[in-house]
Amino acid sequence: MGALMALLEIAQLEVTFGHGSDRVQAVRGVSFAVNEGESFGIVGESGSGKSTVLRAICGLAPITGGTLRLDGAALKSPRPAAFYRRVQMIFQDPYASLHPRHTVDRVLAEPLAIHRFADRETRISRALDDVGLGASFRFRYPHQLSGGQRQRVAIARALILEPRVLLLDEPTSALDASIQAEVLNLLDGLRAERGLTYVLVSHDLAVVAHMCERLLVMQNGLAVEPLTRAQLQAREASQSYTRDLLTASEGYRPAPST
Image (cartoon, rainbow, N blue to C red; front, side):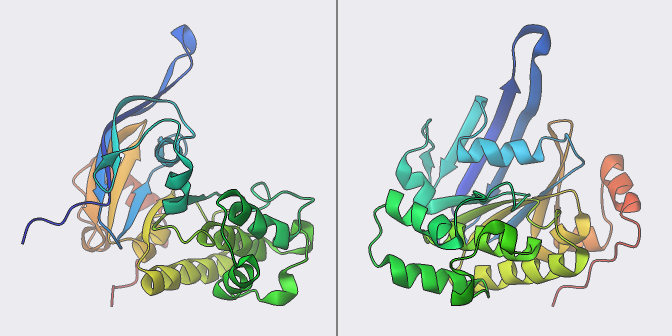
């Protein structure tokens, strides 16, 4: 048996915005690999470059160095349509990511039309059921939904193309604490059911400890250190920045993994 090949490999990723005196190196030489079916976390404060890594994978940020591979094949720029059948991103603010004048039905029908899926009716019904909404939500507009319901629609939209990888950019940080847990549990269940692979970005160590087996700590565009969930729970951080993050997460007590 050979070694398990990573589904997603990021090697020495560099992302730079602007030119001259306005030049900002948002990501500086970051590397990690994610195995199929794994939930991998990237954690850090605002401005650490963690969300930019996700945007680079998705083709939404300018890559100035390094390589990105999916299933062993280098990612092309711009990303071909087939890439978005396999990789979908869920953003932080579900209100901003849904068109205010489009019904839930239209939001879900659009990706199916773009990628020429048949049986749209069945797929839309199933997608709503899968995220716990059901048919009664189909012709509502975003303003008629709560924050948690909007994020469920965003998850349904991502799942409707049956991707293998979900990139989750702070998927619950805009939601109330009680709703956060519901949405995280939904995402957890969907991953287990479908064998999905997640890359989850968060500033919240408790969220990452709940969702991820392994994580990468980032600061100022750099990878600070990789950790496993067990190391996080035992507070076995080797870098002072990570220890400070743990200390700053007041009241943070990761539940023991079962």
